[in-house]
Length: 96
Image (cartoon, rainbow, N blue to C red):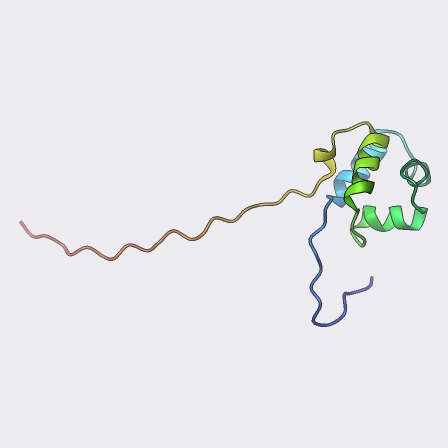
């Protein structure tokens, strides 16, 4: 497995690798068949499926069409983290 060069951050994946593999298997296609339908090499399709290479938006559209599934099924799910809630100042205790 190769690692990105030191100091260079990896961009988040446009696709969910496990979703691509699942959809391909559910469609009954081999890696080679999917690669041919998308118009990429088999090694590239394998790397996309393993999460080592990022699928371009154009290839993501082609994969969705070849797998007969909506693109959103193959897209990486982005979880938005909310900003932390502001911390309220402690209130003074009132005595009765």
